[in-house]
Image (tube, rainbow, N blue to C red; front, side, top):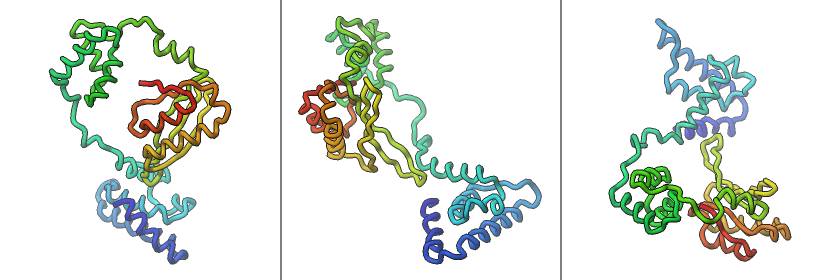
Length: 262
């Protein structure tokens, strides 16, 4: 409702141009007068509807006049606006309290995987369970193995993950998605690539609807931009995000690069 109200209030400013700011100032002053009449006996308190109305009208009044028109400081007004936008992404009321208990079948499967694969650690087991469709945290797997008397992180003969990344840093490029919310509450996604050796960051594209086809095209754009420099890269590091897919890996396999990651 807040976003719709702001858009409706902008219609006169587009069609009429002149006088819109003054009309908005009058609306602010009239509403402030209504608030004061409502609370003659005590201190002024602004209800959510009051904050809603003032924040919506703020877009029609030049900022240099805010201090003269609004009864609160400009910083408070901007804070109200940010609070309205942040409320869109607040899912606290929908979350359950506490983590759901792990079923006995999952615990039995974790112990079985650990005993049949003695070199697997708790993170490897958690990854295998994710492939099977079981959503469970690595810390929960660690607790189950520890309670069963099994070492959650057995020592392997090969290098550790940290040793591998250190030794192969010059040949690794990592891919990951990150998102940002605009002032109007729209969420945008960006696909970035990071060269481990030089720490050079490549932002290949930004979109509101990331798909597998879009991710594949960004991978192609990256390989084209790198040119002959791609010969020095041997590994592409990524997670199991469903937005990648096999076609994404095939772009780098064509350049004789291997996929590695969690």
